[in-house]
Length: 449
Ligand SMILES: *[C@@H]1O[C@H](CO)[C@@H](O)[C@H](O)[C@H]1NC(C)=O
Ligand SMILES: *[C@@H]1O[C@H](CO)[C@@H](O)[C@H](O)[C@H]1NC(C)=O
Image 1: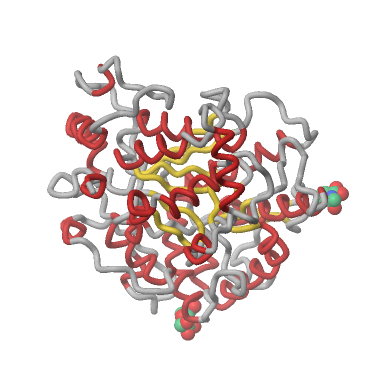
Image 2: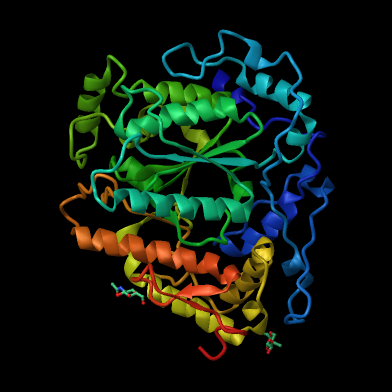
């Protein structure tokens, strides 16, 4: 079909040369993935990896482990903006009510040619989007929790050179609750033509591995990445994937997909009908309103030939992890990592935050060597912990959880992540359940800890 010919990766030949991302990234994720990634496209080879060398550490480290580059580095704002571009077209719409954008790939391509400094490192450039409601939270600690979840994302983005946009305006008031992210993602695609990917992360999701980077080369042929399981999609379960965290490529396919997806939303005259269709098709769905998550699963099942081959369901690592599976393991995971550091002097070295990823590379080598695996039965740091059902802002948590479990779990996950950040600042939380008490890290921590 015609849709299959959409070429979503812009400027894939010739123009892109500067990022150096591919090589280092592939080396990095060769260890993370449980299977071998496909070989790099040939244009990766023309790029110069930035080399970051750790000296005065364990000299047995291989040279490949000493490379790292920040592959989606943000660029300072430019002070020129050539015209005309698609921004000068009065019919171009940021919203979902009007006609979807046409020829978006060509428009982005043209804009990138006008902004060569931004085009250079565009290949896997990511903009992260998150957001929460415009008013104060009903839960007395809700705003504090949202602040800490926001801080967690800001930390992750600063360390990885990703731009973060946090939105608190309801861009389309009739697209409320979980539908509210769709207009934001759609507007962000227009606001960030330099970004190849938009990464939506729900406000109640926290990064719990501050070093991990998604294996972008694996998503080369895809336009939408979510955490999920194809066999559960086939079994028609509405929890076969989670729509709280996703990567969507900034391209025409995505414009069309979002337009189609949003037609099941509350702003649409077909909303009630879609609620009935979803409830009938997914027997385990709890309520009769159409929701965004079931909407994606519906499209995967019923319009598979149109969308299916561009949607990747990731389940090799916690692209998005269910907090109940995770929070009780965090102390032991922290101990596992500390044990590795006790054995590897190089990992105990004090360091600047900007070179954190060089230590991530070194750590990866030892985690691999010691057979420390990820997933529900392993002891790796989970990448993202999502507090599905906890509703930190309203406090209306799902009644299957107690408020204490949610609160305690969030605090532990946030402090677990914060310890990884504070490492570069020379501090650590005394206990994961206490956000207040921190202690300075002694030299050579944790050798005698
Ligand atoms: C370096 O790593 C090797 C291999 O794990 C280990 O045997 C050696 O003791 C380490 N050396 C230092 C100085 O940490
Ligand atoms: C957390 O630590 C602080 C400072 O040490 C202490 O005053 C406070 O009582 C602790 N809170 C809990 C809940 O243990």
